[in-house]
Amino acid sequence: MSQGTLLVALGLGTATTTARFTRVRDTHDAGGRVHRQTMSSRAPIEMKNWPGGHKGDTIGKSCLLTDLIYERVTGDLLFWGFEAQRYLDDPAPEISLDRVLVVQHIKLLLNDPDKAKTQSAAITRYRKLREEIHGVLKKTPFGLFGDFLDVVLREVIGTAKLYYHTSIPSHVELALAFPSGWSDSIHRKVAAIGTISMGKALAANQLENIAFAIENVYTVSETLCGVKEWLTATMDDAEESIDLEPQSTNVDELSEGETFVAVDIGGGTGCMTVLKLISKNPLQVDQIGQTQSLEVSGEAVEAEFRRMLQLMITSEDYDGNIERLVDRICRLFKEEKKDCGPPRLGSPTWNISVPRLRSNPAKGFYQDLMRIDRKRLDVSFDPAVDTLIGAIEEILKLRPEIKTIIFLGQFGGSSEYLKRRMVKSSVATAATLRHSPTGKMDVVKGALAERHKLTERFVRKSETVKSYGTLVALQWGKTWRAPFVSRMQLRMALLSLRSRRTDSGSRSSSGPSQRGCLGK
Image 1 (cartoon, helix red, strand yellow):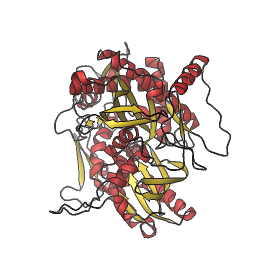
Image 2 (tube, helix red, strand yellow):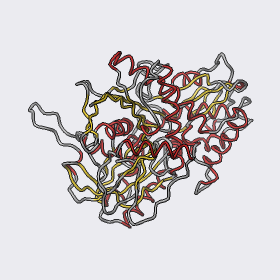
Image 3 (spheres, one colour):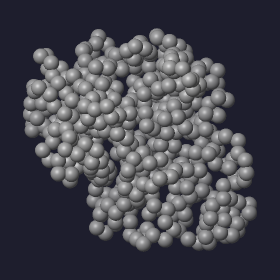
């Protein structure tokens, strides 16, 4: 007996989200193990046709912005994604900014700021926004995250329905790529939100008969998804050849038994994971120790730039709403910072039109025009990069056997300024530096592959069990305590576990705790 399954994966980034889906056919052997095959020759579908997205968008058609715009009085979600970006870019929107609540980087609000290890300016801003969300919308950040997943999954399922028409499968699985270092509690809540949002998406697209429940939701590590895809990708510097010989992949540059570190720096989160390459074929690694969270991200760079602007602009310079002006310039900086780093031709300043700005040449202010020295833009990177270099130097001291450092994520893989600073640092003399230019899409590709290729086991020393939505690993030799669940939740989970075995592989004698075959 076999069944068709629709696999959906989301790369839940801070500034942008990506999505892919495909169809597979599942059969079960006598032992209950699932065997999964692709239903057609068509490659997995990458979501590109998001509402409000147009050809030529600088952020990329596949990368959906996570901005949310709410009406303050009614609490209605007015704009999201690209449409929210266009609203914020409109100098004179039909609905005035006084009437809306702008929520950006909703994922960063899920962590309780009172539990942060350090109280930075960014943490203070998150706390203030969380309080405003509760005061205005009477919701928690998780409620807003649910609003975002509602509209995202509605679009994904609608697109899948158009692609597959009457051949849409009878079952659905959802894989959510999320930060490795975040707590079990947040992963469970996100899995529950994904379950509710997928149910709404199926109903909105008249697909209520498709089988789906919380045991079909999986959280996977965005870092390990990204590094696996990078290892199997063709080398960036491989030359094109007219013959049919296979090109080298990134993993060919590593030796079996070699230890390397994956540094995943995204728009709002950062982490570092030490891995050892056990085998190239099949591709397998061991995770050495736990993933280390880092106070480094693109958001940290933007926070430093924002701090600089707030110190520069005073009521003597500008008689409008300074906070809104700073917000507008910071939104522009998200794009401008991509050009920081390499030698520049042309103007040494970044010129921004600011109506009603008064002249103050000492600050670079002229009538209705702000000129910021591009070297000052570079300086905004330095605190975050200094912190990152220090963290890598510490891990190299603890593990001198590390020979390669792989930078992943939107910031880690693409920032030219980061690359230049790293090359000049002591880190470059101790290890080979590699950057993934496709880190953003690698995450969602890896998340889909995690559920598509069940026979592959990338992280060798782990075993996973299904726990009503999230995958939880048991660390052998230590006592494991189950999370609190209600009586009804426990009953549902037990019924699910009785009806089907875990498909994640055999037990191992040791290994780090992680969610999913790829971790959390």
